[in-house]
Amino acid sequence: MPLRLANGPWLRDIAENMIELNTDNIVAYLRARHAATEGEVLVKQLSGGVAGAVFMVLDMGAGDPVGTDMRTEGQKRAGKPDKRMREGRCFVVKQPLEKFNTTAEWLVDRDRIHTERNCMALLHRLLPAHRVPEPLWVDEDNFVLAMTAAPAGAAAWKSQLLAGSVNQRIADDAGKLLASIQNHTCGSTAIAKEFGGLKGFIQQRIEPYFHATAQKHPAVQPAITRMAALVQTNRLCLTHGDFSPKNMLTWPPAEGETAQLMLVDFEVAHWGHPAFDVATLINHLLLKGFYHAGRWRPFMFAADGFWQTYQQHAHLSLKQAVADCGGKLLGCLMLARIDGKSPVEYITDEALKDKVRRCATHLLTLSDDSLDTALDETAGFLD
Image 1 (cartoon, rainbow, N blue to C red):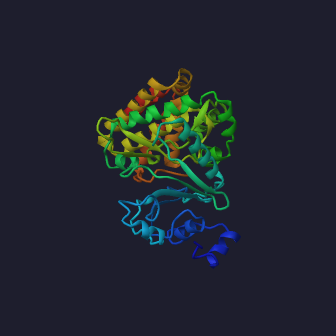
Image 2 (cartoon, helix red, strand yellow; image 1 turned 180 degrees about the horizontal axis):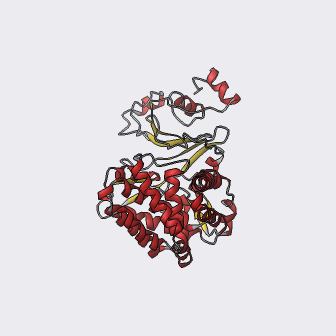
Image 3 (cartoon, rainbow, N blue to C red; image 1 turned 90 degrees about the horizontal axis):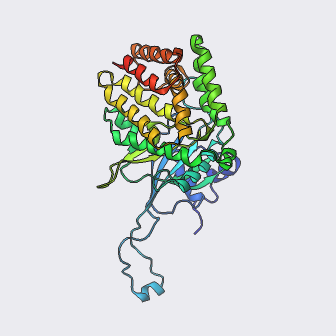
């Protein structure tokens, strides 16, 4: 069947200029790529953070027909159409931004979508089902990636944490998942070669987190600079780069199953230091502890439980590398999410910001770089 928009001005635009997807044009775009049917297509724009546009697509005309085909053999031979509804097909479409939606100017190359596709494909082979989405197709000209959707009812773990609900099983599951990713990739020369480039990590983490923060805090600049160099040189395994609750989708487990957790958003994936992902998640849990003030203890327990579970499952070389420098790295990331280019949006009170600054600065001035010491010291500021 020919496409309805085959000669339209919008399709000529695709050939001449990169299309910026939105809810108004995405259905036509998908049909032009033969990625959606001519039936009803529902689109919902999801939160893409500051870095891109993400859409949930439900193609009602795709998938197998539902129920029994009521046509007679004669009607089939005569070509009478099958009137049954179809089960539909749900998938996610993502397009990264070149200029992030932040107050400070933050430019990142769009080709990071290829890193995401490659990392997702790798982990989809290495991990059990539903741990990461499966990439479906990529439009290299327009930097668009399509992938399978999370199971029905999935929601970002971040929303639960901000609401004050802390599920220790999810924290433990995150520890197992991270250890599994690092164990599967540690020491692989092929994976190190494929993800060895640091351009995306420098653009999205080193410059906006470490360098931008160090400029505002000269007293701890040497410590921040040292940690920035460490995570770019002592590289042991595949690193997600944004191992945070906003990128962890959870849903109610079936009876007898443990917590379910799917990891998404692999734009910052690189061959890196194992401590970066560990410190990233612990930092987000502790920041939400600061946010919830007097109800901070469950968040500290979740951070500590995640760390203990990770240690139980990670290879010795990995967990030792994390234990040795994780505390200092935690201080860097904590300060960055207050004064870097991408401060967390839920800590707005200046007094609370200053409290987090004091905690982060304290961690950066300790002579002990260990993660265990940093967790103990942070508890004093949270209390």
